[in-house]
Length: 401
Image 1 (cartoon, helix red, strand yellow):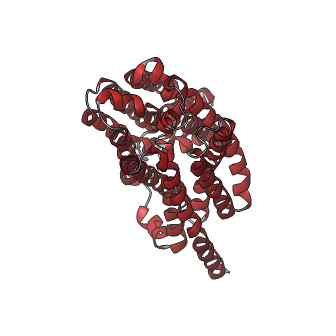
Image 2 (cartoon, rainbow, N blue to C red):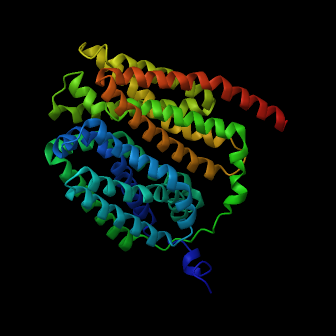
Image 3 (cartoon, rainbow, N blue to C red):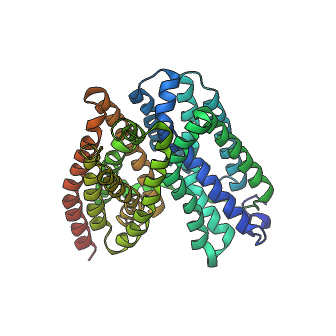
């Protein structure tokens, strides 16, 4: 009898499942924070390593492009493995990589330390929610998945400001060392607390890959790339914008970014409501608000309350677009929605990488004051693309009637 067929792998013990789901949520927070923490650390590590802020920003591009390129194939190759052992291995990889980052003496060593965990992040992201559902059982599967995604959402909203605060409190190396220690702790927690989880069967991606021939799906993926590019042209360098444009003291930048993330919770709630009515209309609304907020930051930088309003508008739209884009892409296909969702994660990371690259080039050629304008221009291109996607959706609906 194989491990897949064994009774132990098929029966999910009820005892300890809630604790295991909490551990998965905390692990998700640490893993996704590892990706986004560095944005808040950029000014500090650029000064310490003697590189430009634009060069340091390419560490964001490296991580994002690695997730984009390796996410789907690595998830497909590893998702069938024993989940408990897989999560322990992933957390140990993150512990090692973050420790290496803490010890980095130059930008190249830090780049290696960023590349390694980027390989494993999409594997965890793609399997954690499914595992949580298995642990909780059918009656509570939705609640379990929501708990895991709460960890991911918290990391997206708070990972950057926490990194900024850590850089000022314990230094950027200390921040990575702390993540290394916490990742190791979570690996031990998974080992001790998580019950055995049934393995998943290998997925036939040749059949599922038919979605890559569907124009509506491809158009929605392209739209996600544009939107995330717009978001991260400016978001990557938000800490630097606050310091150099708004005159925020380096020690206070983390608190400003914490406020940016906290306001984003409003966007997460509003976006979740709006996307149920029409994912495409919700996309148009929040991309327009995103463009307005990003473009307004530079001219209002010294205007006190007004710049806070611009940042709040930017933060609300920024966070709302995460779930909106995910739902929009998954709804664009009639089958293989899991693959569609994974592809949107890759598209988002493509946009993150492109945005960080474009933002860095903008700083080098025109200066930090133009980053918001360039980001808004990219968002404008995304807005122009939405009517085309709408026409494709209408055509696809008529074809299925």
